[in-house]
Length: 166
Image 1 (cartoon, one colour):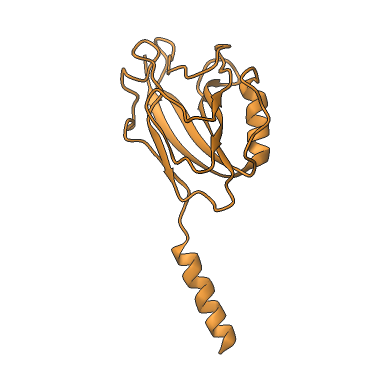
Image 2 (spheres, rainbow, N blue to C red; image 1 turned 30 degrees about the vertical axis):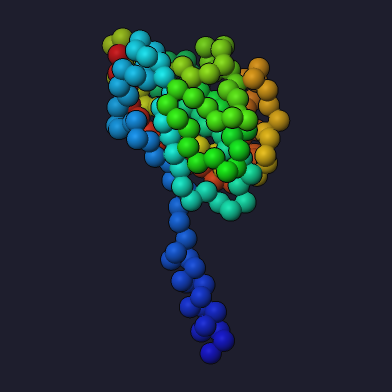
């Protein structure tokens, strides 16, 4: 009987477990003028739910794997978002966090800018739930270095894919 009760509790817990999820009220399947480089170039609103209980901070990246560079293009890197935060507002980042440099060599958000004539590019926006309150990078850290450290500290990830064409 004890074994049956344990199994029932275990399966009920598993059935009620939620998945770490990223959403945006600003983004659908395609970027609009508000978020692209030739438009307003504002970062989108993002919000997430059901982060792991062990989360101590979050980070956000936006990456274009379709950029014609051979290594993709990092458009946005934000780290040290406090573990109590579950949203970033359009055009802003939470207090206590900072942006590292993107692949333009500047900190902050760089909206999509696919080359004219290219097929639509996919932009992967990811929120990382991290096991540390501070990542240990700086505003001058490259996106590649930050990404390496993020992946070592990640306990969960949630992503959106949004498309843009010139």
